[in-house]
Structure formats: structure tokens, C-alpha cells
Length: 414
Ligand code: GLV
Ligand code: MN
Ligand code: MN
Image 1 (tube, rainbow, N blue to C red):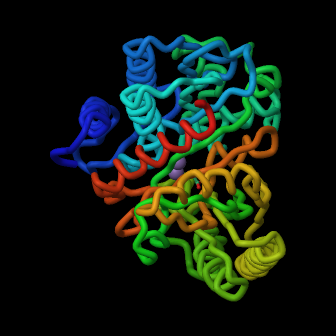
Image 2: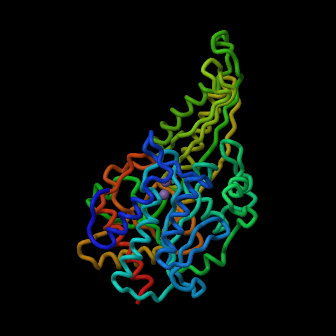
Image 3: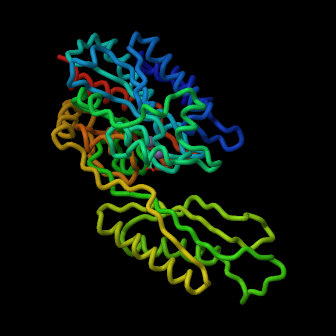
């Protein structure tokens, strides 16, 4: 992003500049801000500094989520906004940080307007939204809302065998405190998450900002294909039990079945043992991410992929097992809150806001089962996300800040 206009714009750009180098890989240009790593700690320090420089009360909750409060949290009916600062492997700059930076910038804008708050306001950074390290997305908001139990969280491990509690401990946090935080959620009247759009609906409609209607049901499944390790040069083709073959055919089946069901299905992560160029693998572990607009289409897709995987495994003398590692049902954002956002934003003649669904998961989607939540999307001109090429124009980001400020003013001010 380059030069800017207005008070909110200057603050936005300054925050963006500060955050930009943290966790950025020089070679790929992408972000590697994984939960409980040094990059994550730097993002958290940045959040805390932003909160304190604005005179907000900083809080760290029992699940490692960060909060910056204006007003008394115990007054109840708080309006909360925010997103996350962690990233997928080689993620873009906007997925998550745009929501957090825009939240602080929107507060600056409201102060500039002289807005008087009648409700407490908080800005949040939810921990481990992407699940890049421990495989489960939205760990912070899942724990807080009780969707994930402490026992389940304690069992999570990263690729090096480090457990979530160990990682938290090494980062200076107490893993023994994690668990549901219903009292905290009870203080909240509305949660609004602003996010870069991860698709091209706004680009196609010609709008800078949109409102979310729903999130598709989605999940992650681990396929373990087990065969027999052997020499790549001396083992006759007919004697091999090569799990890579069954895996490769399953990837093609996933594409085919998703197309037939109108869903999406992706094998984006794979682990191979022993992982040697000259060895037939003994194990190929592939992670399937699948999503669809409705539950039936998702079920049909995953069932068909599993059936194909079992048939291919039989053919090659392979054992295959399937583990559902996470699942999030369809989320319909609170209709009353969504209508309220549309009303607030619709009063500005220049801003017509489309309402759109998304295939991407968000903390707002997890929290929607506990509190009224809504989302604002900011146009992404290419639709590319979870990639260093993710982008949003500066003017659109500032339109997002303006829209968020309007929404917070409408919900939390007289
Ligand atoms: C998170 O961004 C997801 O949709 O997986
Ligand atoms: Mn993401
Ligand atoms: Mn995100």
C-alpha cells in the first residue's frame, strides 16, 4: 500500500507498516505466523502496544486470545470487533490482520468524530485461527465457546510432535487454564469481524464492502495410506505395495466428486514416510479440506472420496484409514444483526452493500453459536487468498475502516 488520505488512513498505514515485516519469509514473500512461535509473539506484542497506546485496557483471556477494552467490560452488552493475526503457511498480509488493523483504525475514526460510547467496546485478536501448526482452525474461539474441550486441545500436536500445551508453555502461557469462557461471552452483545474477501464476488459486483450472510459447512479429514517401504530400483512393479498410487488416484477422485456435487475438495498437505527419493513409501498421509454450500453436498462429496480411496487401496494392496480432524457446520449469521448492519451502511447513499456467503472459515463463524455475530468483507481484486499474492486496494481498505466505524457507531454509540 502507498500514500493515504485522512486521519484514519494515516493511522491505518502506520499500523500496516509496523505489522508488515513480522513473520514474513523473504524468499516467498508470504507470512509464517504460526501459533505460539516467535512471529506470533511479535504480533501479540504489536497488538498489546496498539491497545496501550490508545489507553485501552489490555486483557489476555484463559485461551490466549487478546482483548483491548474501552469502557467497563462488566457493564455487559459489549460490542466487540477484531479478527486474527496468525497465518497459513506463506499466507498473505490481509487474511486476519486487515480485521485487527481496521478495528483499531475504526476506533481512531470514531474518536476523531467525537463519538460517545454508550456500550463497552473491545478489539480482539483470536489465537490460532488458521490452525497451521496444530491442524485445527479457530482454536482460540473454539475453546472459548466450548466447541473444543481442553482435553481435545491438549491432544493436539504439531509436525514435530510438540503438543499444544508444550507450545503454550514455551511461549510463556499457562495451558492449564484453557477451557470454555461463557462468562466472557455473556458480556458481549455483538461481535463484528471485518475480513478481506476470499473470492471475487465484490470485484464482480463493483463494491468495496459487503456483508456476510453465511459460511459453508466445512471440515478437514486425514487419509492414512499404508503400504510397504522398499527399494525404488530393485522392487518389481508387480511386487510393490505403493501407497502413493492410491493417494494420487484419491486426489483425482476428490476433484471429480467435488465437481459432481458442486462442492470443493482440496488435498493441500501431505506427509510421506520414509520420504526418500529412492524408497517406495510406507505411508502417505494426505489432508483433505472439503466445503460445500449445503451439508448434503459436503457429505456426498466426502463419502464418495472415501469410497474411491478404499477401492484404490484394495487395488494396490494398501490399507487406508480416514480420520475427521475437524468439522464446522453451516453458519447463518444472526439475521437481526445482519439487517442492522445493512441498515446502518445503507443510509450512506454511496455505499451499497451486497450480502454474500463464503466458503472460508472464521472465528465469527465459531462464535455465532454463542453470540450474535456478523462480518464485513473488503474487496479483493483478484480473489486470491492464503497466498502471498493476496491483496486489497488501499482505498477499499479505508472504505472498510469507514464502514466498520459506522457499524460500531451505530451499535455502540448514542
Ligand atoms: C480459514 O481461513 C479457512 O477457511 O480455512
Ligand atoms: Mn485464512
Ligand atoms: Mn482469516
